[in-house]
Image 1 (cartoon, rainbow, N blue to C red):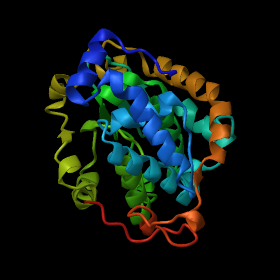
Image 2: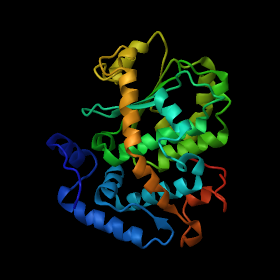
Image 3: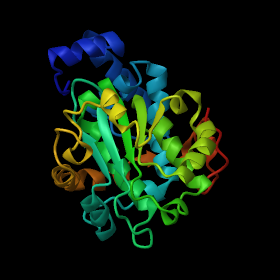
Image 4: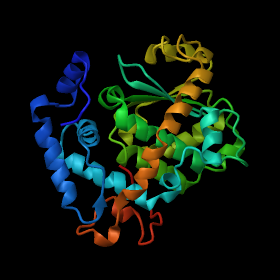
Length: 306
């Protein structure tokens, strides 16, 4: 079995919090791999570490892991706008990477911090769809190699400092629903909180409209910080890891951006290889809840997210 060993501390957390039984891991991986080979509609990665990442993200529930893997590849095949043409060296991808709009911050002692920034994006030159695509590429990398992120979970820090009406006009209901579908059904993550700073008043109204889509569990984890209470952010996210530009003691935004630019580019062959994996609905034996959200041609149907 080829999997990364965990530190003793992280292994203890995995045993306590996500039901990991180290001696049972080979059996669980073998069970999931066999199940994948029995699904005629599904072509998925089956290496040990990849399957273990899903098992951990689903707290070792075999049924939940199967459902998540099926959803992972079903949604990818049905939303090519997010998951096709993911060569890191494409000009539009390079522009977004260089802006540092989606920057994971390694914490290790707790949930991974993932910083989302609007930065000085010109919506006429950079589409929100491509921004989401790049953020999902980085999410793939985290899923593939960050054990701390998978086991400890994630905290999302959104900075809307430069948000303007042109950005908001790109946010369609369909795009919102697809984004939340990816958040809830594609990645076996554990969102611990959504921390919003520098949010314009107009976005508060949009946020209130979007909460029913997210569901009670996720929406209850949204925290909005005003300029008056911004220092309370440090109570939720360690100041030791926050970027210098946010009053923290961690790396600068420039350093984080360069680090993740190099990381994404190093995954080029992996992303190109990903094109062979997916879901062929014509071969599916039983319809699923996720596949029913998409029409015969992959068009998006009305989505109800609990």
